[in-house]
Image (tube, rainbow, N blue to C red; front, side, top):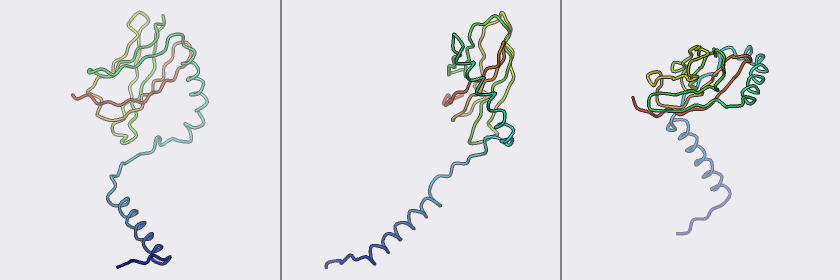
Length: 151
């Protein structure tokens, strides 16, 4: 038996395949939740020029900031500067704002210029690490991190 394929049959088959594809995406594709980056979007957009300037300040540092992922947590090494460093860091999790973590810090002039985020604050997944600090100027650093350590 020979099947004759004409325009009518082709259009109907295309529509059936398209409907099956849309149904698969709507019901069987895994859903990944996402939340808004910020509830104060407009205010943060106005202040973005300040962030651009702070990012330029980071690029001008003679020794760059370093971030290491170890078994005990996330270690941040600041450039060796003979001043107090104070600021805050945020671990931003786009999949759930319940997993976001913000904490201020102060590193004294004569102490080790390092900061450790312990693993007890981290759950497996992707984070955006945002660090804002001030020495003589303001600085802004961000980096994407994947935490996969068991603990």
